[in-house]
Amino acid sequence: MNEATLDRARGALVGGAVGDALGVPYEFGLRLGTSTEPVMRGGGLGDFAPGEWSDDTSMAMGVAMAGARHRTLGTAEALDDVAAGFLDWFESNPPDIGNQTRAVLGAVRRGASDDGVAIAMLHASQEHARGAHRAGGNGALMRTAPVALAHLDDRSGLADAARTVARLTHYDDDATDSCVLWCEAIRVAVVDAEIYVEAGLDLIDAGRRDFWAARLDEARDREPRAFTPNGYTVTALQAAASSILHTPGDGPDHLREALFTSIRIGDDTDTVAAIAGALLGARWGRSAIRGQWQDDVHGWPSRSGTPSRVADLVALADGLVGA
Ligand SMILES: [Mg+2]
Image 1 (cartoon, helix red, strand yellow):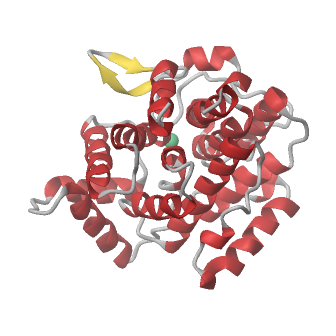
Image 2 (tube, rainbow, N blue to C red):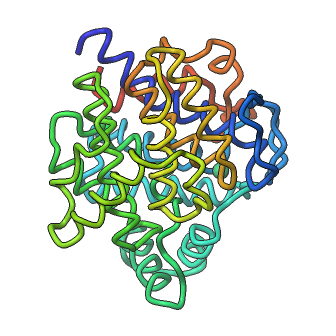
């Protein structure tokens, strides 16, 4: 893999983490004005430290660690590792966790099962979705980027893995489709250095392809601020896509301004910015991301009391792509 491609692969993970930490202070808060620059000042729902990432990146770390270890996310063993990583994170008592993910992971932790942990989690997730719950939250989409990096040379393997990793907590067609679409967009950004959010439409089940084509048209046509509230996986994807598509320029300027736009939409700011940041980083590379942000981001998991930092994200990206 050449240096530019590797830089973009690293950018997918670093961009997601940076977007998350930048959006944390504004989650469900007052909408920022169009000239207000978001700052990584911590706080938010989980009272995070400045630069600390939240559940979005922590769960992505669970996916990335398993993917780097197995060099795929498409096997039962890798999926068990993802599920175990989610439980490790859950048992660390994270300050901020989505309702749906809390319900599913809580059910797995409490249940004794002879099955592998991934099978147990899939069952709990399916049970949750069968109840009177909306299962299409954005909590799977927010952590999907590492799946793309593990499958850069295999579109159909990417789609299968994106669906299965999503279903661990979000057993829902909208959630799985959004993960397939975003992963394929990230794959294309890393491999071909272009932003093409429709790239994965052919990987969606034929019966839902028109629905998604119309949603992506809306993201192209409508201003980013149209996509709020964005706790639903479809509007979260549209919010991120619209922010990226409606921001002019290229390189570091495009990455920064599109991230700011994604946060200024308001509502679930850290998650929308984490989603947007993954694709922006995949397109423009880690080298396009402000150095101070890279120095400041950190979070779960900690080893001997030391949180993970950008070097850990880079190492995981390298492991995922086999560099
Ligand atoms: Mg979050």
